Amino acid sequence: MERVNGEDIWQDREIRFDVDHKLLRMINGEVQIAKVENVEDTKGNNGDKGVIRVTNLRLIWYAMSMPRINITIGWNTITGTQSKTSTSVRYHSGLTATTTLATRNRGGSNEAIYVLAKVSSSTTKFEFIFTTTNTTAHTKLFTTIASINRAYETTKMYRELKMRGIFIRNDGTLKILPQENIVENVSGVWNLSTETGSLGVFVITNIRVVWYAEMNVGYNVSVPYLTLYSARIRESKFGMALVLETTSSSGEYVLGFKVDPTEKLQGLLKSIQSLHKAHLLRPIFGVQYVKEKAEKSETRQIKEDEDVTDVIDNNEDDVEIEKDIRPDPFAAYFDGQHSVTDEKRLPVLNQEIGLAMEPIRNGFTLKDLWAIHIDG
Image (cartoon, rainbow, N blue to C red; front, top):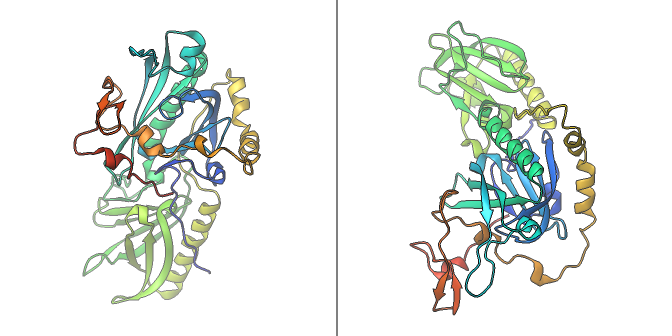
């Protein structure tokens, strides 16, 4: 059978700004759970109406007037969420610093959703503030975000490679995950990670490949197909061996296993490759969300994915004025050392540029703020 190579899925692991509209479309296995309109990205696009979409992998926000201005925030990057009152603040000059869309419509203060995020490969923190113009919409949106965030955090076994875990019972049986089915149990499998090898058992399911030692079930490894780059047979010092390679985001592990006879090894490889290929076509990320039946209007919104695509696609060839494009979206959401419970520091006069600005974080210079780049 032709070898199948898996790919790193970035949607739940990265924060990206102003991506091509095609990258906002749902990928295989991604499901839109909620869609709310008239949501303001208060920190980065103050005053602009936008649409926020909640999926099982990420949060997506884009401006209704210009969808190319957008944010995609993977659940794996989110470190905290909070519903907090946002109040407009006026300075002596008469300018309003934190006036939000809802504040202008109703006056006074309004509830906003604060999202803290951080990419694992960086120490940089981000803060996003989303404000709705409707209290009911805010409550439902925040509840959905909090629920999906919790569901993502508690289902990592579907998406992450685990070693020496507690997913094997003392009697040698696998603790089955929801939506998981055991396809095959293969005994007499040697793990080649040590000089002498360890005899154990393969448990192959529709979601992952699990190996555990017969003499010590705590010595084990779980490799979800979402982390698997390839499965192949290769020569080793122990003879022909089954080699499982994981993706770069999973540590690029190379795991070797020996099975005799050769016919059994070939059959094992074929099974893993077939299940891996099937899983790539219809991935199971493990994040599930059940909506209340009473929320009929929201249920209808879940099915409006085609409408979202149309909105984005129709703007593909639009000619926009260059000044409307954000020159540095990274800086707009840079959180510095703030948390959602901290009060923002008032602007001070910066002698270099002759303008009032928030004090620069220790260790940074004004020049550093203009030298930030986002690959993407």
